[in-house]
Amino acid sequence: MEEQMRSVTVRVPAKVNVQLAVGGARPDGFHDLANVFLAVSLFDEVTVSPSDGLRVTCSGPDADQVPLDRTNLAARAAELLAARHGIAPDVHIHIAKDIPVAGGMAGGSADGAGALLACDALWGLNSSRAALLEICAELGSDVPFSLAGGAALGVGRGEQLTELPVGGTFHWVFAVADGGLSTPAVYREFDRLNEDVRVPEPAASQALLQALRTGDTTALAAALANDLQPAALSLRPSLAATLETGMEAGALAALVSGSGPTTAFLTKDEDAAQTVARALTASGTCRTARVTTSPAPGATVV
Ligand code: ATP
Image (cartoon, rainbow, N blue to C red):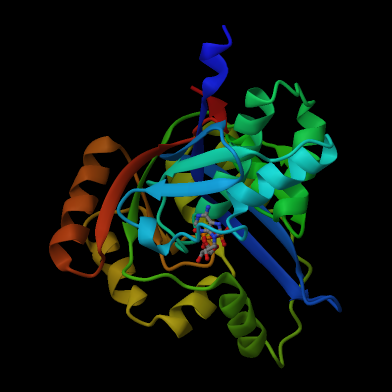
């Protein structure tokens, strides 16, 4: 039994924002959001095992871009959880990374949620869901959703979550761009572009929530919206060609995923997704294209 607890692995999904409504900058610099998250079947795996001190390692194609010090969200999650229980965060965290880094798919947040759940199991803490979600919110706006998975509406900075029902499976292609985009830089560009504009209060689209509830792909395609897209395109104009390539290959809708530069394409079925992925790869307008489905489950011990 003890031997079995020598390591714990948690699988945790990436997300796409099917709606990202952004309000004006608040006095604290944050923005109020209406953020509809959908978890997609692209996963990182976080494995924790006992160690003399806190140590982070990472494998996968983007591993060299992942910080291995205490700024890694997985390390911060372990430290926060340990501090709450008055124990030392003596753990080796290994991240098998498949989610693009700085791609607007909440990869770092996924690792934070994954490490939290894994350490909780390794250390036998049995924290309540509410206690884990509270630590997630402290780690970052997108982290609670990485723990929860499925679909959810996030308000506030995005961290106050309400689970949303989803009535079907949606098929997506993600075009992974070369290099990342810094989320704070994209918000700064949003502020610059909206300097003289009265930005409305962010609100969830009822048409979009209905499309998720009924599993209606065509209706979801019509309702997709990302207020950060103009800012991401302004910082990375080449993304316009990627979006166009996917639409020409038959996607029902295309949008920048979160703060980008990953772009997301909704297709009517798996075959259409494969066609769009092939066209994107052949076009040279992205580094790689990934076919996924949604909704995906949240952080899960495997
Ligand atoms: P979001 O969609 O939440 O805005 P993102 O997907 O654009 O995030 P991440 O992959 O989370 O971006 O990485 C953003 C930055 O966070 C990275 O450039 C890196 O410096 C830092 N970071 C901290 N922890 C991690 C981690 N575990 N994995 C990847 N990046 C991390």
